[in-house]
Length: 164
Image (cartoon, rainbow, N blue to C red; front, side):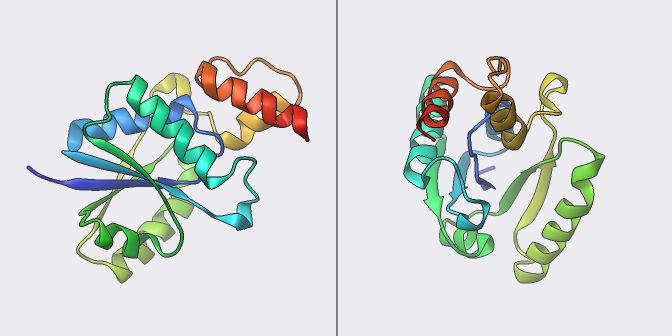
């Protein structure tokens, strides 16, 4: 089946959990668009272009560039999905604590775009607790984040934290 899915997020920074979900999504869809949200309210550590570039490099390294596009966006997610003819939104579900927020988001998206389905994927067990926020906090405190991000992302994060 020819299905395009959008996997949205801030990805600040992209983690191995994010990459795991991208790989899982490619098993379900013929095309996956990683939609990197500008989201200035979250005050990202990396610029939108830097986040797009980091994920693009990892997608290339994973050999998924033929079926995965990485695009920055602003605005309403369902409008972005429609613009790219996506029929599915991929959302990560790490733990029960994610459920309430994701349920509300999925309900709103369904109300705005009933033709686009929300699909929830869980990362591998070893990545189920990993979040960008936690990775940044551990890195700020000089902890070892090598199990949670790729070497390139780890280097970028260490460089950025040294600048601030």
